[in-house]
Length: 294
Image 1 (tube, one colour):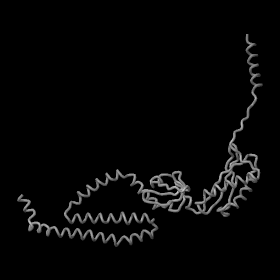
Image 2 (cartoon, rainbow, N blue to C red):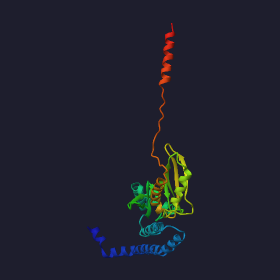
Image 3 (cartoon, one colour):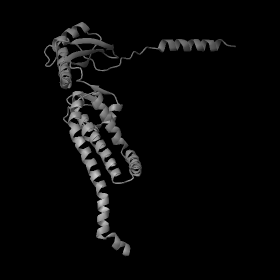
C-alpha cells in the first residue's frame, strides 16, 4: 500500500512525466516529420511513375500503399526507439507474425504478384478482347488480385491474376486488324476455283469486312468426306469477330446453295468385295489334296 501511495505521489508523478516528456515530444516530431515527408513526396513520385507509363492501378499500389506504409513504418520504428521501446524485439515479433500471415494468405499474395506482373508487362488493357481459360470477352477491369471480363453473353467473369499468368492467353485487340477464319467444306466433285469466286464475292457484301488486307479462300486440307476450305476475312475491331464469323458462315451457305455447290455431311463409303469364288476354289483345292493322300 505504501508503494502504491508513493507511486501516485503527485510530486513523483510530475517528475516522471517531466523526465519522459522530451521522449514523447521527440517521438511525435519523428512521426509528424515522416507524415509530412510522405505528403510532400507522393505527388512527385506519382508524376514520375505516370510519365514512365506505369498503369494507374500500379501507381496507386506503389505510391499510396507500399511507399506510404513503408515510410510510416520506418517512422513508427524510429518513434518507438525515441520512447525507449526495444525495437529489435518488436521487429522480431512482427517478423514471426508476418510469416504466419504470409502462409495463410499465400494465394492472395500470389495473385497480387501476378497482378503486378500484368501491370508491368501489359499483355492486355481494359477494353481489349481476350481469350483465357476458355473465356472470350472484353477486359472490363484489372485489379491487383483479379481480372474482370465481360463476355459476349453480357456475363461478368472474375479470373484470378495468377491463373491468367500461368495459362496461355490470346489478345485479339493488341495489333489492330484481326483475321476471322471461317471453316467450310465442299464435296470432292465440286470445283474449288468456282467456290472461291463465289465466296470472295460474298465477302464484298459483308459488313465490317476490310478490302485491305483482301479476303482470301484457301484449301486447308483434304478431309475424309469433304474438301475443307478456310474463308479468311479481315476486320478492324476485335469486338466484331464473332458477329462477322456468324454472318459470313450464313452468307456462304446461302451462296453455295444457290450456285448448286454441294456442302457434304460427314459420311463413310464402304466397298464390299465378293469372296465366294476364291473361297470355294480354295476349299476345292484343300479337298483334292486330302483325297490324294494314301
